[in-house]
Structure formats: C-alpha cells, structure tokens
Length: 504
Image 1: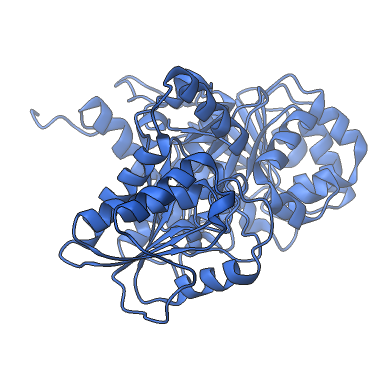
Image 2: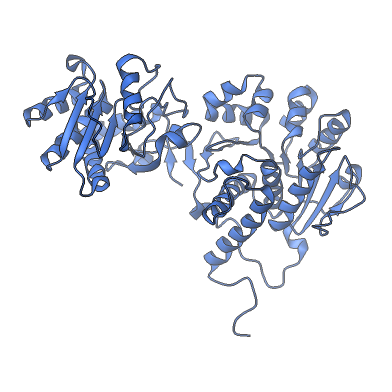
C-alpha cells in the first residue's frame, strides 16, 4: 500500500535526503516533473499560465515555467511575492528564469485564453487563511476555462487535513511530490485535487521515514479471503449475530443481515427489538431470527454486530451492555455508538474488552464520542480517528469522503473508493453487516476493516460505472455488487472458477 505522510514527516524526508545527497536540488526535479506533466496534458496546445507564490511551491512553478518556455510553449509566468524574501532554492529558480529571458508578471493578466493553468501558489507549508491578492488569484484560476494542474497540493488546501483555508484551487489534476499527503485523499481534498498523481523525484521515502499512514489498495485487500475448498460446509465460514432494529427501524437490521449473508457468513442470526423476533425476512428467508436474549446464547456465533436501527432506549442500552461482555469480535455501529457516548459505564466496558472491536462512526457520532463538535472532527479526521482508537482500544472507521481507518497500534489508512451516491439510507447498515461477515470468516479486525471499507466503496463505484447511480443508488444494490466483486477478486487471484469445472 502506498505510504502517506503528514507535513512534518515530509519535511523530515526532505532533510534526510538532502543531507545524504548534497548539491542536488529537489526543486529542479519537481519543476522538471511538473513541466513534463504539463507537456503531456497540453498535447498540441501551447498557451500556459503559471501562477507562482512566495515560497518553495512558487519555486517549483518557476522551474516549470523555465522548461516550458525553453520547449517553445507560450508561457505567461506570474510571481506574487517579494523576490528578496524567497527561500534560497526558490530565489535561484527566480534568477534562472530571468537569466533565460523569461519575464514575470506581478498580477494575473486579464486574458483568459489559456490551455493550461499551473497552480504553484502555495504548497504544504500553508498554515494561514488565504487573503488579498492570493485570494483573488485563486478565484481567478478557478474561473478560467482551462485545465488546472496543481503542484504538490491545490493552493489553499491543508495537506494534513484536507480542509480548505477559506478558499482553495479546484484542480483538474494534482501532481504531488515525494509521497502522498492525507489532505489530498480525505475531506475536501478529494474534490479539490481532481485526478491525483505522484512524482517521487527519485526519493525512496519509506527508506528514510517509516510511514504510519497508507492508502488502501485492491491488490492488498483482495487476497485476504481465499477460494473455498470443494468439501466446505457452512460451519467453516462462521456465524454472525446482528442486534438492532427497534420499532420503525427494523429495515436497518434486515439490511445488515442480508449484507452479512451475501458476504459469505455461513449462518446469519438477527434480533430486531421492534419486531420479527420470531419471524423472518421474506426476501431473505436464510436469515434466522431470534429474540436478543436468545441470540447471546448461541454457541455457534463467531462475530457480533450491534447498532443498525437499535434505538437509544433503556432496552437498547441493556442489549449493548450485554454485547460488550461477549468474548466475540464485535462491530459497533449507529445507535450503539450514540448509547456509548451517553453512558460512561459502557465506555468502560468497551475499553476493557479483550476481543477485537470495530467502531464505525460518521463525523457526528465521532463528535459525540469525543464530546466535541462535528466540525472539530472534520477539521482533522486522522487525529480524531486515532484519538478514538486510543481512548476505546478499538479499530476505528471514521466514515466520509476518504474514510479513515485507525488502528490501536497508531497506524492509519485512508480508503480511496466510494462516491456521492453512497449518501443515502442504509449504506452504513450494510457496511456493518459486511464487516461482521468478514470477522466471522476468521479475518483479523484490521483485515476485515480494510477489506470491508474498500469493497463497500468499490461496489458502489462499479454500479455507477455501469450506469446505476449515483443519483438513486441504494444500499440493497451495493450488497449484490459487493458479493459479485468479492467473488471476482477471490477467484481471479486463484485463476479458477468457483463453479462447476468446464471439463465436466
């Protein structure tokens, strides 16, 4: 999985590499990489606007402008800053562009006839709101009818958090340097970056600084479950118990149970506080329904899920309290999280569990668990996820654009899959059922979480690619898509069919 580094770690990588490679300019490498990518994007077009800021990101842009000019492109380079206050490398890039015959504008010209805009205004060092001429420059870049290539990060975007500092460039494409940054992959960063590419500049970041963050990749998680043996039985694939479904919310429990069944659990039992306790799901009669107290007494259970439609009554609280005493791997979702936030005794029980626990909050639920505002969660999603994991000794999934998976050992992962069509009812319920099924089949909490969240989003992406959604995409559709995709991964990797041999 590709490593992800925060700003302080990127600075450490730079310093370590430069100490080992004196006399080599990373800025020259970055600027050349940017010019080469710009050339690829331009094709037979030739009009380029390069907007350079007062720091090293501006220096990258100045180097790119010099190369593009030398290659025959019509380049308008704008420098917004004081040349006397430039850092050393950027100052050298400034002088070299002028020495090569290049000119620098002091403001963005009124002409809008550009084929490509290169955003080199601010990079990863920005820690203040965008104001004045810089704000005007961002507004101007966003208004131009041209492709926008952002260098390292779109100007105005916090590279650690994905939060825009009052305003940010909306890029067509972002070329980031050395390594991936979390702000490019979560919160507003996913939309601000456009297509994201990495130029390592010949630096092996992982050999210099061990990453704590990584980007989840299909090539890793697709192999967590292997093909099934021909003499398998349902007992080989575990049994999931689903607890939830208060009055008026039974559908949430049904969705979670269906997802657990179709993601491969050998048996699925469900208990709905609001009904169906002795009944069944007519569309999925394979799910076995019990009363909550009877569900806890089933010896064959290998994983529990609690929360989908659970409600926050005292009956629901009692069910949660009992579930936390279980020795089974446990997924805690939805209203179970809200009950945890309201009642200190169950927080203590949660932190004291010896079996693996996975929490799956959205930002509002995470805020209630940490007793802060949801805006505080979104302001630094990675830190919030790690804080939850440490406080409750759990594996944590913070949902949202670029979902964060935080592990008790302090490592964290960002999920790249999913789309806006998933902002609809039931999506969280099916994810909890999927996670329960993966835990029941013997995956570790980390494996189940990484595979589950990636598959959940990838299944929705596959539907949208096939013309279903994003508008009107439903959780039920995602369940079937996830089943198909998971089988494809498992049997493609093994190069054999899950069905009857063609030789027969």
